[in-house]
Amino acid sequence: MDTVEGLKTDSKCILTLFWRKSNFMLMFLLESQTTGEVTKIFEYLQQTLLADDYKKLFQVILTDNGHEFYDVLNIECNHKTGEQISKVFYCDPGASWQKGGIEKNHEFIRYVLPKKTTFKNLTQKDCLIIANHINSLCRDSLNYNCPFKAMLFLCDEKILNMLNMYYIEPDQVQLNKIKKYL
Image 1: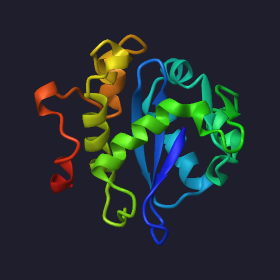
Image 2: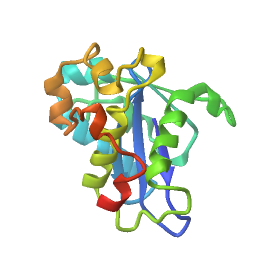
Image 3: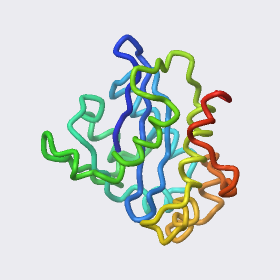
């Protein structure tokens, strides 16, 4: 788990959730880089997914020491029962290499939203479009498969569809031209 920031004057940022085995990533637009906004995403995920699916997908969460991730209980626990259902671990300070896969996916985000781009007018729909293109991009590391298809080994496609994630044919994947549609 990590965040991608826009301009320093922007309050909005993007929360990214990444599955290392598949290179699959979810992107959520946060109105501000706060624990409250991160909590809202985990509440949404718990409401959207079946409890067993949520537990399977979010057993372990690795993140950095960003202040938006300090409210561990609201990330680890079921919001209805208070039961701990996930375990959060933090990277060592200054050791972004400990979560290198997510950093690589952030490079793909930057193809569409370069550094010094404002997120002021960005919407959650825009984030979904970007994420679906990134997740449909074939990778050498996945034996020329894409993260979306690799994720199907970890969960059912219905789960991905509930999260508004879908497959895009390879010849339709765009990262550098997509910004004109946002």
